Length: 341
Picture 1 (cartoon, rainbow, N blue to C red):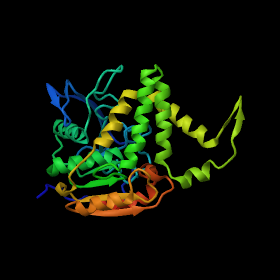
Picture 2: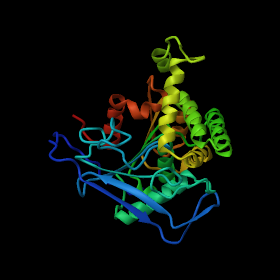
Picture 3: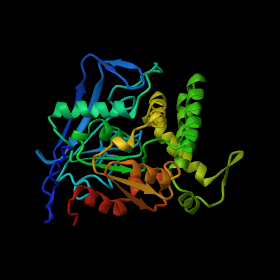
Picture 4: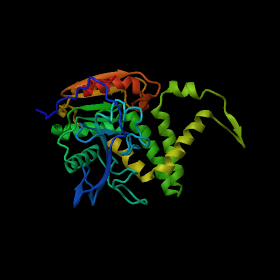
């Protein structure tokens, strides 16, 4: 069956010594790469990062479309879950990640409004396979993915079962829900209008602001932003409006609109055959998640070859995979069979 490495069992706490070792690089893929949806790319580059002690088991950690290869250690997107003493403990494990194909990082992606082919979660999985081969990693202890990263984890588990010890899938399913696709479709159209009108940054800012309103729960937004609006110049500005526009501006300053279009579309193109995924899989659904309904995750788990379903509640909604370190700590420990003190 699947080639699954023996589980790590650590019963005594490991005292941290120095910061975990960090390796980074760029893999250059020779020749032409054929993509799942029919496109082709030449000279693909994949920027990667590996954090942790030499020869420790490897866990690949993948996040949403704005995530990068920097998972932990000060500049990472998953500080609550990955790093020294965290569920993905970089004193016990090596944490691997890479910049997505088509994204705003240093992996190959669209530049200067150029046409870029559609990208599938299967294409990201193929990049991960090539990266494992390049690094000489025979099999992952686990592949942990949240949101889009969970989709990539599922695609990898279907295509390369012998290389995936187990999967931890957070806030993701085997296909997108049409309501989530509806929201993302509007976001992409806003970005396209911005590009066409010469206001690309403004379009991306508005699209991200709209996206943020779907990532969090109505309970959180209600608790944080119930105050009155402020009169500024000639109009009222609402507290939640100020928050969303600030988050949109931050995002637009760090990401390319063409990359947003590429990876947002990739989410909605995502389809995998859950019945062909046999790696042991823990799938976590959040009751307040507006984008990935609990029923969709539960249905996927029923189709998996070896799936376990875990449901949590969080005011952070879809962003619970980034925020709920305490609730997810036990999930990670059980999935990885590592004792967490």
